Image 1 (cartoon, rainbow, N blue to C red):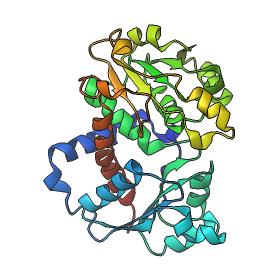
Image 2: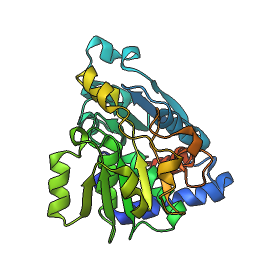
Image 3: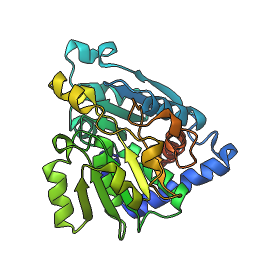
Image 4: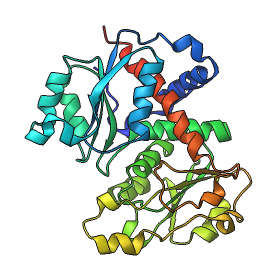
Length: 304
């Protein structure tokens, strides 16, 4: 049984196949309206979500399939103490494929060990978010027509930002990519990820200065400081407005820069930038449906 749990399993070959499929869906949507007819997707969301949950549900419905599930832990048997393992044992009898988002790191892996249907990780704590990574790869490819020889800036919460961790894992596999890591000292990337980048000779620099470093970037991936990941409210309040991208900062950037954000945004990107052609974050959210359609079809190929 094949699953998608960790971004490091997204090889360039696999990503390339899914991107090609997603681009064909964009261009020929009428060819895919019955691809998953008779199949059921279970959405198991223990954490709140708008884009990820709705894009998965939209993806399955656009493929002609059906959807069932829950949108919060409180509306599931987890509120009674049921384990993820037991939930998946049960759900495997109701659906053909399942997507899970959970606040605990490793929950998606546990789910896959006890499931008899394909499992997709839609985010586990501050760890991984591989389908957001696929969305990001599709977006980058649509803008730059390549996934190598790029300078990728990541700004904001690099410590808890699972989308950041997943994107670094994926983009490190392509040739000559460089990373510019912009964050306050308290929110730098985790040690395990830094050590892995050093071990694999991945080129990166760390800085606290967005205004100066933006000029070298082909991609700027902004992230919000995530209140839900902090144990101390005072630390959150102190750090939440550290970086705000506005017209002044963007004036130093390349004309073909792609400004991305996994959303939701708070105030880390000024709304005055929304009309700038370099702002692709809403297009990025839209692409999430197409890449998830491609992924669902891929994982269901082996399901009888």
